[in-house]
Length: 469
Ligand SMILES: Cc1cc2nc3c(=O)[nH]c(=O)nc-3n(C[C@H](O)[C@H](O)[C@H](O)COP(=O)(O)OP(=O)(O)OC[C@H]3O[C@@H](n4cnc5c(N)ncnc54)[C@H](O)[C@@H]3O)c2cc1C
Image (cartoon, rainbow, N blue to C red):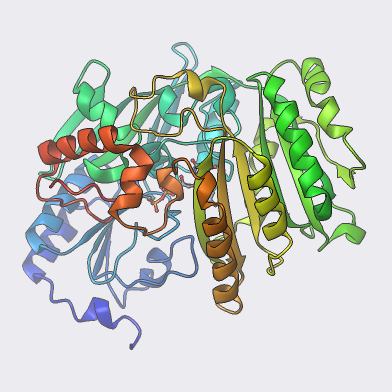
């Protein structure tokens, strides 16, 4: 297929495009424009799409104009926040992209302990502003992820066992509906819609502004990984499983299997060695944290211990070099009730089979504050799960990608007897049944009813879609 053919084959109504151009404070970008190739790039390098038009929005008025333009063209419409959707749902071939990534406003109010953030904000940008006041919103573990998409799916990360999901600290949103109308949602205003956006993704409209409650964090935390040889994985995981039963909510951990990366903090003799690591983040008193993590740190014979007192911002950025934009990524994910012997044996055996030096698969420890929010209070379906595993296959380019992808898929299939649910933000393009699993049948039906109310024609369908009918 010639480059860009899907985009250039689309005949746009030129009068409508001119009208959009004159009304936008941002820019209209089309095939052939100097920034077109940059603007259509998204994080996952295995996805390469050619939209007919990108509306780079500068504010709410632009979003309203872009939605009305999308309605007028009848073309598929994608909505882009941080561009980190695993299956690339924020970019489309031959359609219109409503690009929010330039909407970067953030305002922290230390007195009310709240923060407002616009839809183009990245996690690291929000952390930077909130940490200036010793506070934070619980979010994800890679700073260049978009705050918008992450929040709309739930949001899991280093602070979740202490402060819950990102949506558990969401206070209100401003949203533009499929009809181009401005709506507010909170516990008091449009509470049904507010329930829906706390996990139901971009199905109900475009959220232009998020308001969060802030909580004290750090700025110094006790955090970092301890590494063991990967062959030790079954023993490490069995010890870990028992040890986490008694750890306080201040501690969240992630287990990762990978080849040790060539980073300055890792001695050269370990570079490329297969390892299993437990990564800690303790956000309570530091001396208390030292006591809590000691048994795990002292288990067996670790190759390296990088757990130390450090700025929360530094810990948040720890995974950034492992997930740069442009590499090829494939993911399969599931929630697990617990790390049973059977699950551990499958995890340990498959870890040893990964080929790519770039593949790293995290197992998140859930529980704590997440599990104390009512199961029906938000659409998120993993409140009672013990862990979320994200079997990530990564290569730098297309070379070796198919093989690594097959490894991820087989591994995920072997684990199937242990799957409980799945986190919607970790889905690929896996079909409606999987989306239903991500919410559970009752909450899925409630989301469908809400979709019928707010978007009966399924205008917002390039997402983890909840069709109205
Ligand atoms: C490197 C990496 C690390 C990650 N780590 C975590 C993690 O630690 N925890 C976690 O919970 N998730 C994590 N994720 C998953 C992440 O939550 C999702 O990929 C999320 O969708 C990313 O949001 P985005 O705004 O960057 O994505 P985009 O691709 O821009 O958007 C994702 C989806 O949300 C919709 N959307 C985006 N903005 C809006 C808006 N303002 N209004 C309406 N709809 C909108 C899009 O249309 C699309 O369907 C990670 C992803 C990556 C790539």
